[in-house]
Length: 198
Image (cartoon, rainbow, N blue to C red; front, side):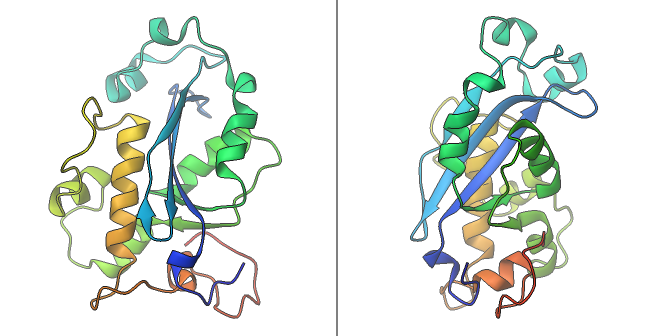
């Protein structure tokens, strides 16, 4: 992958997962939002039945109940569809290690081409914020305006869409131009070292 090019030349997919609250968590919901040629696309999401019940603590956060997923298939039924949407894209996520831990366990053998962690990029590019939680950054930059109706915080489609908007905000320089992919993934522009989390 050419990391010395603007991020707008790369295929990016923003990912957000919701889990069942176990340790380690199993997937309950995943949403993917493509960013192609600098434009945020529409979310695609999957709701699945985890192998172990959703804890009440997890339900309190994302609102997904065991009753809602009781008749749904498990991850195996949709894994190939999720893989197809991810492909070889650069994956963007807020606090990316958490989402990637779930995805790489639930999709054995899949690895992203590179990763952009908007939490780490925000800390570097937006010094002095009171909080770098996703919700706080969404409020600070009005990133939830005109979202499709029915979406709410802590559901995968909402979180993935606002993370996509946060990424575009962070990845644009003061003149309105795109930063280089290497500036966002934390990899050398020459590509002499393997991709890493940034």
